[in-house]
Every structure is written in structure tokens, then in C-alpha cells.
Length: 211
Picture 1 (cartoon, rainbow, N blue to C red):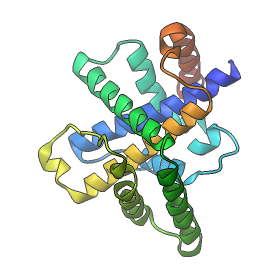
Picture 2 (cartoon, rainbow, N blue to C red):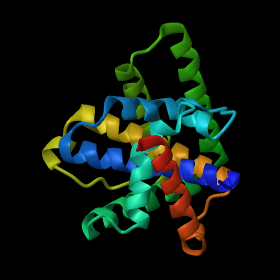
Picture 3 (tube, helix red, strand yellow):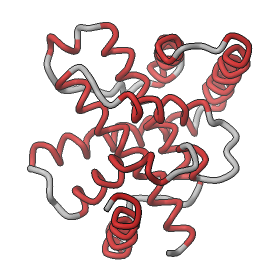
């Protein structure tokens, strides 16, 4: 597998996984604990040695994201589902672009996350505590960039503060993956000119680790 496309597929699958979790949370109020923890950990991995280290050094941690990516490329989702997922992806990449252009907010975000990592090493926060703290960072920094992401789902579920905090965290992880995707050379034109190559390599990954 082409090394560059490998990193592009992993990081974009990270975005897709975050979006899939947003859909689950907004529609049912819950999601997989293990996949949610992968999202939290990806945000805290601010100095990764490799693309895969952002996702716990295992392709298996991106099963949902790779499956979602394949469904989009294969048009296997319903029109409504595909449209919703694509809107979330575009919204996340738009916020990544705004963040990239704003050095002040980049520094603010790096400082806040670094402080959280440092405090976590001392106090060993639970994932519930990390969720609350990362959600607050999202509100304090990401939300102020503008272009807030509209989340669709059950209004009753979306009024639950615990669900709101989890959704902010998985959106945060989506932005983190979008930053990584751009860093490894990802762009949307690749899905036009190299669609089949990306699909085939993502499918090879899926068959290798999930069959």
C-alpha cells in the first residue's frame, strides 16, 4: 500500500469515525465506550510519532471509520444518511481550515490541551472528567471560531448535557483528525481523481483487520 495514501486513509477514517459517533449519540444518546475513548485519546495525542499512533497504534481502532468511509465511496448509505455524514465532514473540515488560519486560537488550543495532559498525568482523570474538560475547551476555543456545526437528531436526546458533552468531544476528535489529514497531504480532490485507489486500499485494510 502506498505509504502516503495509507496515512490519508487512516486520518480521513478518523474523521468518518467521529461523524459516525455523532450520528449515534444524537439519535440514540449512546455510543461504543471503546470507540469514544479512542476519540478522547486522539485529542490528547498532540505530538504523535506516526499517523497510527493518534489512534492507539492499531488499525482495529478505526473499524467504524473505515467502514463508514467505504460506505460513502460505495454509495452504500441511504441518500439521507450519506448527506448527513457529508455535511458533518464538510463542517469539520471548514472548522479545521478556520483554526489553521488563526494562530491565536491554535496557540490557545495547544496550551489548554497541554495543561490538561499535564494535569491528567498527576491526577489520573476518569474519562467522564476528561469528557467534561474537553467539552469545555471545545466551547471556549473551537465554538468561537464561528461556523458552529448543526447536529441533527432527537431533540429530547440533544437536550441532555451529558450527550452534548460527548458530541462536542467526538466533533473535537474529528477536527483533530482533519488537522492530521491535511498534514499528511489529504484533500478532497483525491476522492475525485484517486477514488478507486482509495476505495481499494481502504477495503484491503478492512479485509485484513476486520474479517
